[in-house]
Length: 395
Image (cartoon, rainbow, N blue to C red):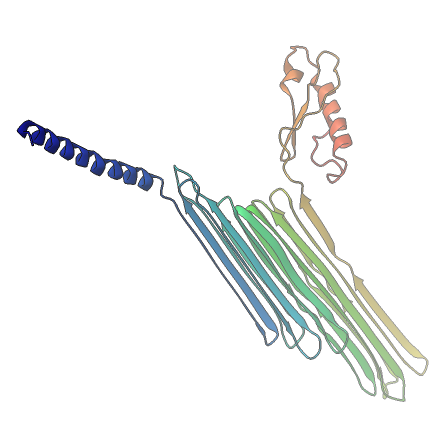
């Protein structure tokens, strides 16, 4: 073989080897730049028994890089019931999703925890706590308890809420009850008590509602043969509180009723006593929140011996209902023309009505006419907003 040809072959072969070794390395580097990862995780549990139940659920998801997605879902529920039919229920559900991109890691987390229980005296309690972070995160939760006592007293408490995106929701509800009726040869007595409380709070995209209801009633009559006495009483409450967005609401009612009738077989006299208490409190803070608390209490007693008779009765009915309409912004309506100017629209923001700039363009604008126009328009457009509380007062 010619010497010049050999050298040429050697150089060409080396160059080819270098080219072949360089090509795969460039391809591997390009593949690594497109790497993506995703991860999803969820766990849920429920524990019912002994007049109580609790449920919890957690979900989280993370995605990094274009084309990466992850999703996780969880749900749990529990039910507890005793031989008398008293019940407690709880449920929790969560979802978390993530979609990756080239610029940042996407993640979301959702948690839901609920519980409910009833006690040996008929009291009921329900709780819920929901938290979410991330665009594709959601949580749902509900809990309730209900009892019926041997004397007919009923009590129920419940909470239910949701949270999506960045938000949270917390709820608590408690209901009691109690009825006592007693009698002997010369007297009769009856007592009724109904406590209650519900508290809810939310942030971001959270919503929560709590409810409570209690009904008690009792009656008794004297078992003696000389003279007669009877007594009866009842009490009931109904509570509700709802919160959405950044807000809170609470309601609490306490009702007492009591009565007593008796006769004195020696002094040949009779007496009757009755009283009914009250208390109802409702608070709310933030647009889209509301609270109501109401209750009734009644007590009556009668007694008589020979020609001596007595009777007494008492009643109380407290009721409170408060609410704040959801915030409305950027809403406009065509206005009427004033004597020297025109109202181009009305802007609403948390209950404040403001004349649009068009009402002030003219130096001689009749402000009173424009304000009156806005007030009428607001009543017409928002009659359901607690009789126009969102509107300004007429001049």
